[in-house]
Image (tube, rainbow over all chains, first blue to last red; front, top):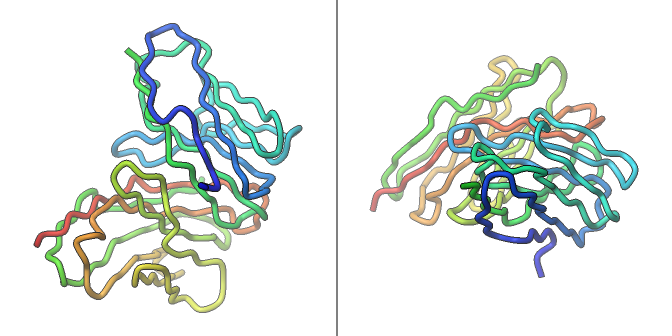
Length: 112
Length: 115
């Protein structure tokens, strides 16, 4: 089984809808991250969490929120989706600080 | 502010030829440096990383990279490319103090391999 899983893998939604992307990990890491990937821009950090009670904004957090339900689960929400949030979203984990980040397979989100 | 630049958006090489992908970073202190590969429809897989010590780092799939502090570079190399190496490659830098663990990614380089 994969160490970092993301659901759904693909999602098409409409403008204004609320959507949640979920991430689970079995690596036992404390730190989890959400990135979005856009062509030509690489990956940009949306939010990151050091543990269940420590959540921090990344460089592009506007329009997004997160929830760390447990050490193993970190969800990303779009409260009111808009077309420019169409992107590939990745979850990652790492431990200890500064060490390798392990990525999930990604969720391709399309907002119409 | 930290930044990573991959000057080549797209590179095409013939199978069996050598490869070098460029990466330049901007960071005031000692960086942690990474190269990841993303195959079509897949997540990112770590190829190699540099934290300290020997500036020539060996990775998986026959890749290596050299950290050159004077040039702020961390170029990825492979002596003989295989068709299966066609993918997108990302260079990334992290806070070397380990305080945040956040990665800053370059824009990516897409590698095409000709038969």
